[in-house]
Length: 221
Ligand SMILES: Nc1ncnc2c1ncn2[C@@H]1O[C@H](COP(=O)(O)OP(=O)(O)OP(=O)(O)O)[C@@H](O)[C@H]1O
Ligand SMILES: O=C(O)c1ccc[n+]([C@@H]2O[C@H](COP(=O)([O-])O)[C@@H](O)[C@H]2O)c1
Image (cartoon, rainbow, N blue to C red):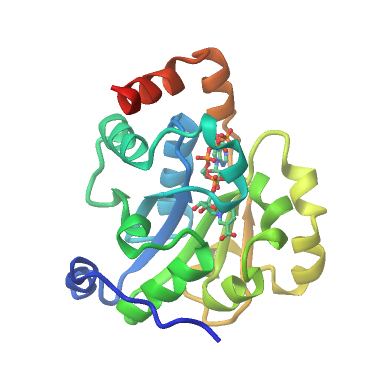
């Protein structure tokens, strides 16, 4: 039995604005944001014919919680993503999960569908997440709630397309141009876009401890 979501007023007030629109929900740690993220947001807008992409800065990926020392605080990841990407009307950066108080994607989707029943949502993710998707909380519920657009990523094409997710849902694969508007569930597409090698792990490794040290210093002082 699922708990009924409690929705902050600020989110209900967005509902009228996004009525009848198609929004790509692009969740991420963005620890930190990089050009690969920007590439995916643009590809999603174009290839899925979306009205907007919301980059949802996660309060904390439930599967990365054990690596927490490596994770900058959500507020810092949000402000850094906003400063770096300079959001437009069609690509927005949001802390909606923090405001909803949800960590798990299934809960976020339930809350958004409840608050904004007249907006079409599509979940956006990179191919690396295909391998772990069947460990996400209520992953089958996610598939019943929204279509899923999966974007190719260097090093993950074969792993993703041979994942348990692919094996279990192969008959639900859809062509990308129909994905955002299909009412069929489950529905997912794999988008073989030009791949981008951007990686937050690579940036953290290159910066040494700078990105992390910066936020720990602020937390201590
Ligand atoms: N270069 C990329 N190509 C395709 N998808 C990407 C790319 N970089 C990130 N993504 C996707 O963007 C979303 C957010 O990614 P995230 O913030 O975890 O960045 P990351 O580079 O994967 O970070 P980390 O290396 O710390 O795991 C995820 O769905 C991820 O699969
Ligand atoms: O709900 C889950 O169980 C779950 C498990 C792993 C990742 N997610 C979500 O997937 C998105 C991508 O996460 P990440 O860390 O790869 O950027 C982000 O919105 C996470 O909250 C969600």
